[in-house]
Image (tube, rainbow, N blue to C red; front, side, top):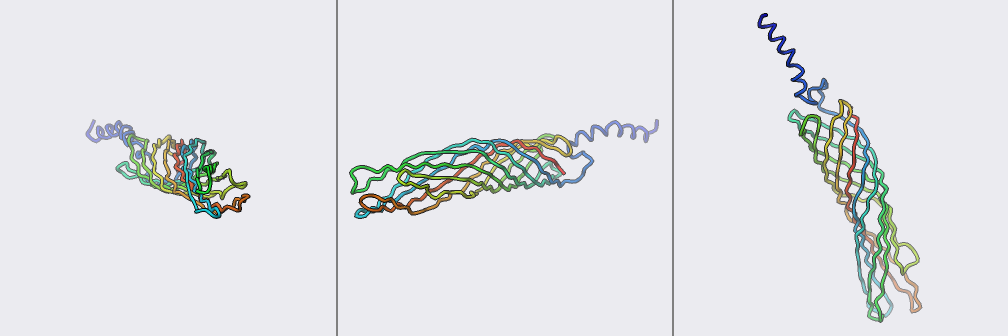
Length: 255
């Protein structure tokens, strides 16, 4: 057997080992840019900081103000879709960006009170506050940096911006009507990370965790309490600052 024949046989025997050692990069697809789309489902866990400030404008008495705040937690399911782009480098590093849109189903309710003692009143006035919030949907856009710890498994860290839509209602016991509601979209920075496992050339599954620091929003309105001694003006300021953790399982199709 000549040297050329020996070399050909050796290469034939080593070819499967060379392909296996290369992991995902050893696939026939040499494209390092991939789009993907998928679904996710999991839990939203968080807390919301409620705040209420009131001022009593009583005729014949100096104006007096007081405020109170309280926290309420919530847990609920979330599910949605994600779309992203990934670029992989020869050094097993990944850079990418992805966005998600999720529907939420969680709710929190908190009751607290504000005590005010006007100079012309013998006893303090206790104003009861009932604040409710329903978490409707969340969406975000994140950039990530990842690396392959083992073949086919990518660990990544993400940084981005998130939005959340809520419906809320606020009521105090001295008024016969609801206060101005904060039915609006909150937003703020988010951080997170996760791990993704390639099941095949076109499918992957993983887990993702993120926390979003939503910025506080507030609204002020003026109300009137009709009393026997005359009308009392009641300016009220309500505020809400949510903080939400999101943990989901993901399943993606890779183009």
